[in-house]
Figure 1 (cartoon, helix red, strand yellow):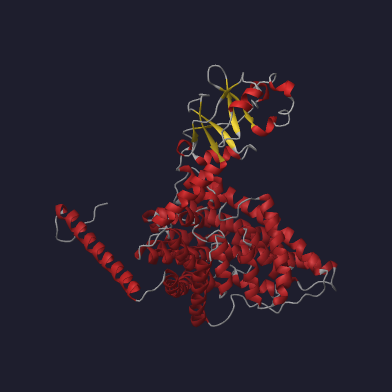
Figure 2 (cartoon, one colour):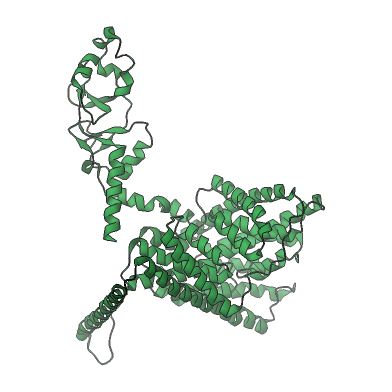
Amino acid sequence: MKLEFPGKSARWTTPLILIRDLHLLRRFVRMRRAVFSLLSRFRISENTLMAILAVGIGLLAGLCNYAFRSCIDLFRWLIIDSGGQLTGYSPYAWNASRLWAIAFPITGAIVMFPLFIKFREDMAFGFPRFLETVNLRGGRLPLRLMFTRGISSALTIGSGGSAGQEGPIAQIGGTAGSVVGHLLGMSGERLKVLIGCGVSGGVAATFNAPLAGVFFAHEIVLLSSFELSSFTSIVISSGMATVVSRAMYGDIPAFDVPAYQLVHPLELAFYALLGVVCGCLAALFITGYGKTRDMFSRLPINPLWKPLLGGFLVGCVAVLLPQVQGNGYEFIEKAVSNDVGWLLVTLLIVGKMVATCVTVGSGLPGGTFAPSLFIGSVTGMSFGFLANSLFPYQTATPGAYALVGMGAFLASVTHAPMTGIFLLFEMTGSYKVIVPIMLACAIGTAVARHFRKDGIDTADLAAQGIDLRAGREQRVLERIRVKGVMMRDPEIHPETMTIRQFLTRSHSPRQTTFPVVTGGGELSGVVVIHDFLGIAFEPELLDQVTLGEMAAVDILTVTSEDTLAKALQIFERTPLDELPVVEPGGQRRVVGILTRHAITGAYNRAMVTQSLKE
């Protein structure tokens, strides 16, 4: 698309754009020089600079959270509340007006049409893509992402879609951190830390829980890569965002949770069992979520129709179970306050799972954090009803189990137990909840990992063969070829050589594994020095046994053109510390020896070089 300026011919358009961009670039460079000149004049260290930036990003994340939540309230008032007044819709009246629940999420999807058409890439930029960009692609996020993802996610939640606001606000805060870092010319780990600051600030402001924000950024976004300096910046940002949230909404927790009490030591066994249940359901939820996304991606229809179909399906669920609409915070408070019946919460376990899968799986923007809390609360309450009916004098009310279930299911789905533990601790403000929630979160996470290696936020990436935790290391190793680090001119011996000849002629201090070749020079096996030490002291065998007889023939090799990433995978399948390197193209002619130590050394040098560049 060509940009036209009023009153100018098309041939002047390009020069004007270049002049404008050059002017902006000069202003940007001057601003950066002024900032770094100021820092140099006052001798501000890098850690101090990061702390200062963390304060600003935290404040910005807190304000973004306020704007985002206000958008959700606005869209809910415009679509559901106003629509209900016009249509007579009542979610709790069993009459034909309940059918209007189908129209509300469809309306939200229709309003999003311009965004889907104009910013298709941004609308597909879900939380998994966000994690990939932060951890593997340098963390450069465009400013417009704050508005496109923010408005679209607010529309999804405000129109009754079953989604959460924590994933989107994490993206909004992270984008704010990325933009600030980009303006200051930062890259690499420093930019990643600033993104973590924005994420922690957004989540902390949402729940009024600074510790939960810190561990959300640390466990889920930064993948537990701990450094004291980065951790300090994230803590500062989380605290500042919480200050903004409390100034806007008051010093109140996200949920009004009653006082928690452990009735009997036997309850710990029930909480452990609840952790197992939450872990199994979390694995089921992750699997269903992935299959739903795959189903929608394979549908042979126009992509614009898929969010409409998702809105229709979640509306159908809402006709029967209107509690699945939105983030579900109001119903969670009822659950932990024992204000709901057993049948309803049991039905909502399945209802909320289905509604969330079709909402987010169809392409409607939103997060899975709040739905996970919802599913955990109804799972815990249903379990609590059962435990209380069987052991009325040894168990607390079902609301207590709903509370612990929230944290256990969240930890299981995200594979982030510390986030679940500290979120529940900050919501209750009671040390008594620590032991049950630690037990349930740890067991639930272990069970979920047994069935599903990846959490809900990384499962899609894992299906594409992307491993975030090994991603950076993988990229470094994939850039280096074996021929650049292998040991050249290794000792190679013919298979007809006897043991005595080998012991007499072999004096290489560099090798412990020796290739054995045929008369034509092709590899036939390898011998390891330790393999024949046991017969070296039997003189009658030294002239009778040849290397060909001693050599291991079922061996693994690498080629000189292989990457170190592929070589490392081959090393994982053998106990040897050295592998023969052969020519590419199926040739068996040995050109070198590759050692595990050489791979480690090359990787360390590459990482140091990359850090210096950053």
